[in-house]
Length: 180
Image (cartoon, rainbow, N blue to C red; front, side, top):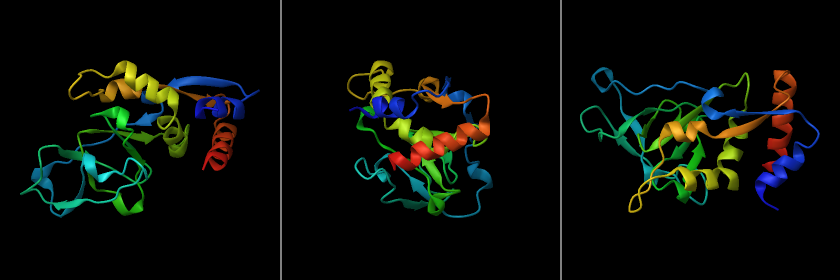
């Protein structure tokens, strides 16, 4: 059974509203290197393990030696998804250890509006076969395929009981617990 069918089965009988990720996420910021005073850990595209879905290695950078792609500030519970060669499924949830660090512009950063959606709810949908199919249909380029951040954020996920945020988050939490 596919993960989406399983998710849909878990949602059986619950009213859902399909919402685009852009309507469920908060804006993020890029670093202003001229104002940076410390050393950062840089999450490059190769930093995230495709198999483990975690950050396995980073390098330290400062304003003096930061690569041009080192721009996106990430926080705890952000989901990062590699938009370059996206069907490799290189994504992960940012843990405490990497809060406040810098990710490559090769990632789309999804910061859940936690009044509406749990970060792990988004994470499970990013890992779904539906999302992978969506990416395949919306990427461009053949030698070096990519998908834009805006296309990633156009992907829709189900929000259970949208009229009751407290109940919605409780349902999401229970389904995430089962999927974890």
